[in-house]
Image 1 (spheres, rainbow, N blue to C red):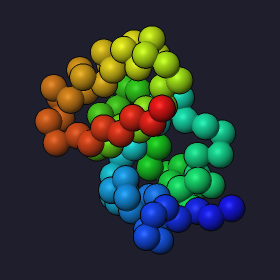
Image 2 (cartoon, helix red, strand yellow):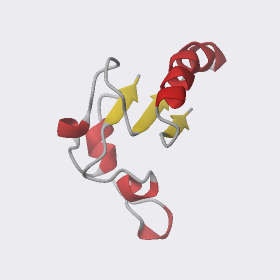
Image 3 (tube, rainbow, N blue to C red):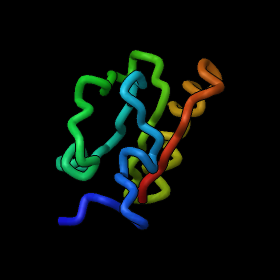
Image 4 (cartoon, helix red, strand yellow):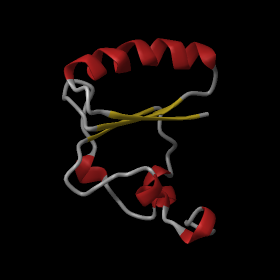
Length: 87
């Protein structure tokens, strides 16, 4: 499996995930860390903590709308937050 995206850039770099960042994953696939090409489990935080980056996986608009309600609350607490949504 090719773990790099277009132009050979690793996915973790495209998403802007840096080693010092706290990352909140929502509905991530089981092979998330494999897809990233790197295990960032030590950066993964719970929903009770304030993240630097949120990566939400939404299978449909119902999930997207439901989860974004909470993500928007996090954005008010951390205006510099990065949010990625994967469909």
